[in-house]
Length: 152
Image 1: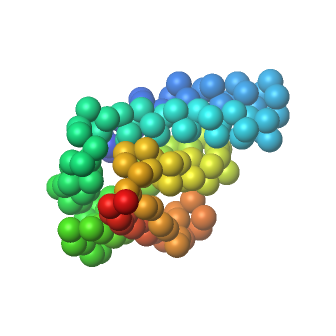
Image 2: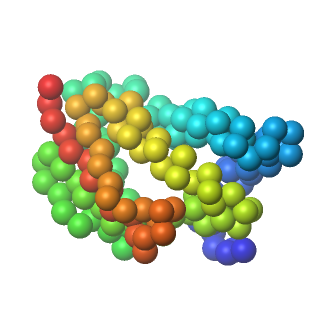
């Protein structure tokens, strides 16, 4: 297992979820555990990615979200490929969620988690559209995420 600080921090955050899914696999089988994972991942993604924006007025959420994406790019985990006032395109070179789940033999659960990217974007604001054409969990070398702001 990897031992860098980002990995350790995220692992500590994900351990309860991982242990719950392992228990669900033992009790109900992998297919049923994946159904449970859909709900657990939605809750996890909402709490981690949507909740921080809910106290921000709706008309300012895109600017805050966009600013966080731009500010946190580090060229190791992800880099900004393109951005303007209404769009941010990112290339993720590292997915800690995938690494950790793979290390626990749960990598087949990660594509379920990846689906939360769509609901997370719309949860932050219905004016944010998310798209992706490749993912690490799907076997690609990187994930390409694009968020577009379309005021409705």
